[in-house]
Image (tube, rainbow, N blue to C red; front, side):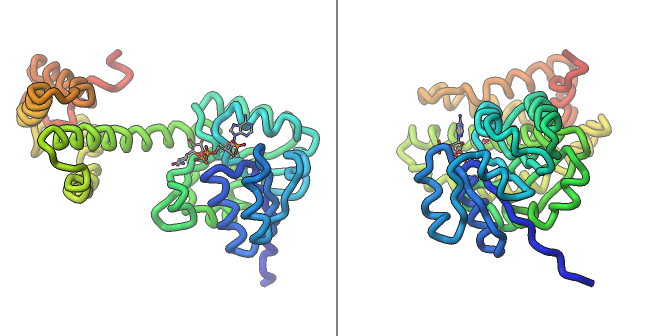
Length: 293
Ligand code: FVH
């Protein structure tokens, strides 16, 4: 069986993520062309062997696979617009964070210009690109995902969510939302400990260990929310109302802002007032899901 020839790759956008991605492709021996609005950011990559393009159009022309880790949909339109004539026959992988509708609009525009489109969401930090700690989500052209999967896997393990170009973005926002709530909770807790003179560095390892335990609890939470079976949960609404109420009261008494946990306290209070105090904590899901609004 003949060995697959590595396709050339273009990376449009050399911010923190783009630079890491271009570096990963250089590491795997791909021929890499790079372009960035601020040209100086290409220099370290060119020094490592990347080809620097003077314009986005020149960069798109250089490779069949065009990876776009730009800031957002506005930046993607501004970068790809002047390169439209070079798009026919290319595969565009748009990794910019956006809403599902913004992704669908860009997908339609790219298709109108004769290119295949894959939307992507980067569940990675710049330092976890091309490591097992990161993963990317994709949706859009199945053919693009299949043909270029080896290149996608260079950036991080790749997961495909079907042909709707917006699907990767809603899954991205859902995963990000989980993390943002945890990070906001951490910052609140750091402020609480700060009020008694304890530095955040003391909290970090304790919180990390607790979050690991919480992560292991997610499948159970998912099972309960997915089935609506809240009677057997080990952690009830009433039990958590006490803990969250204590956290909010202690914070307020110490002059620490309670903005992070006030909404959760309100949800638990509502659930209890509705007669569901003995249901599992996961039953808060019933107040959040769209069909109840
Ligand atoms: N960094 C992170 O922690 C997160 C990790 C998870 C994924 N996000 C998303 O990744 C996208 C890129 O984020 P980034 O961290 O690489 O962002 P920057 O380092 O700020 O680089 C931004 C690049 O976008 C270019 N750019 C901005 N506006 C325009 C425009 N109007 N036209 C053309 N290019 C534009 C910018 O160019 P320059 O400022 O260097 O000239 C950078 O190349 C993003 O969706 C995150 O949500 C990151």
